[in-house]
Image 1: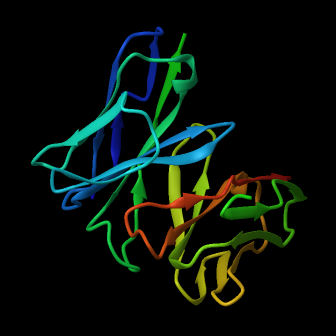
Image 2 (image 1 turned 135 degrees about the horizontal axis):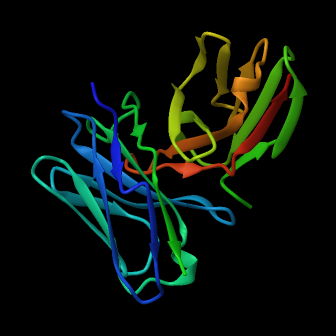
Length: 115
Length: 110
């Protein structure tokens, strides 16, 4: 079974630009969660999608948005990039995203650098 | 105060030593995860616990729900165990997200 695939692995953008990151979950998984990891803040929850619907959202500004397609692949978009958006963006997939016995599987992450 | 606290923040040990990493949390949870992150970023889920103890190879994870505490143990540590170990909890009031600890950076010297 293929794992969680995130593309691209590395990205350099300039301030003010926008960026789109992609996450392909494990086949059959319908839940995709996105996390931002920075040295100062650690891992923080961005949002979670299940069956093309955003079910939960963390405390990030509206510049951060996402969507999920019918094949469960998810994209995350950040508009008007700021230097502080430089981080590792991780996605996790799980079968339902619910319940005690649901395990999450993580991608390798996309390292975004904003200059 | 963070809702999930890990200790120690950094740990350096010699190959073969028994390693313990601790995680304390302040919220009610439905599950606790231990994850491993290697340089380069990829995260691997090691354990998901809601009670008791789990073992996988040289790794053992325990949780005490009443005391809101979990430990990750590594027996016969090896340099390839060097990584950041992260504890994350799934709060009772939200099954959709995890609250993360800051991680413990482990270095095992040969």
